[in-house]
Image (cartoon, rainbow, N blue to C red; front, side, top):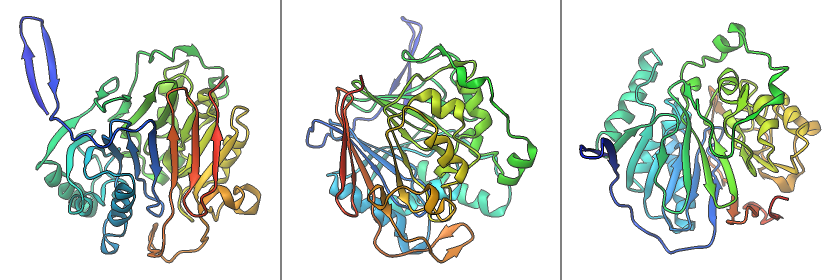
Amino acid sequence: MRTISALLLGLTVTVWPSVARGQPRDTLDIYVIDVEGGEATLFVAPSGESMLVDTGWPGFDGRDADRIAAVAALAGVTQIDFLIVTHFHTDHMGGAMQLAERLPIRNYIDHGLTVDQGERPRAAFERYSNLRGGGTHRVVRPGDPIPVTGLDVRIIASDGSVLTTPLSAGGDTNRFCEDFAFHGEDVTSRYGDAEDQRSVSAVIGFGQFRTLIMGDLTWNKEHALMCPENMIGTVGLYLVSHHGSETSGSEALVHALQPRVAIMNNGPRKGGAVQTFQILQAATSLEQLWQNHYSVAGGAEHNMPERFIANLQDEAPSQGDQAVHMGTAHWIKVSARQDGSFTVTNSRDGFTQSYGPRN
């Protein structure tokens, strides 16, 4: 990114490098990619421009980079125009170097510097920092736009700060704040949320269709974003935050968003918490939950029927919380239209369900 001062107007103008245009299409296509409990979600605008949020794990012979590149090829994407790294945990940024060997990355977007200490997390961040230094890098703040042609992409949280002025669709009093219970140190220290609470989060609009992706933004930060006023408004599609972990996805967020559909990018043993299922199932607006994996924690009581789950294996060898399954991976695709309608498809069996414009 280059910054030019427009002295006569008293403005600062951000000039982004031009991005390649793909074959025009009628829909915003969203691919929720299986990276075994990490996160990687590819947005392909009608203009053909691409925005990838997070890159999955490193290692495993480039497993996650290969999975992202395969979905990108299927979508007709030959480069990543905008890469948003929500925060500097390895399941979110670790695959960036391997991905860059497979696809050019034009613009790197993140919250700046890691707060994690220790040799391993600092070394992982340094590798990513060196990579982004070879491209165009921007640190974003709440309210910033990301200029994906044909989409309205707006940052709602970054580096521990959240919106203080509501989006055009937001501003209503949030009645779900009344019973909000903050997580105490017993939870936050156990999960080590210093980086999580700094997650870059964004709302993506395409005509009447709206969705959001939040990385691992924490439960307590959701309160700052949603209470006493809902700064976001409603969405048709909720991309479930933090893999469906119990440290995110409060009623004050989920119920106020009034999503029609939710997609959980969980792993077999990462995310997919019982509490998350319960909060989603209690949302009166929700018509359907889709899952990237069968959740071992959720069990038969909470997991959706198989047609709504992309990957059914409930066991995978693990290295810490990194699943090392190297077999076939399936994804979930959303095709959204400007009137607010959209379809969701499970790539494993081709099952598709359509959702009309919101009444």
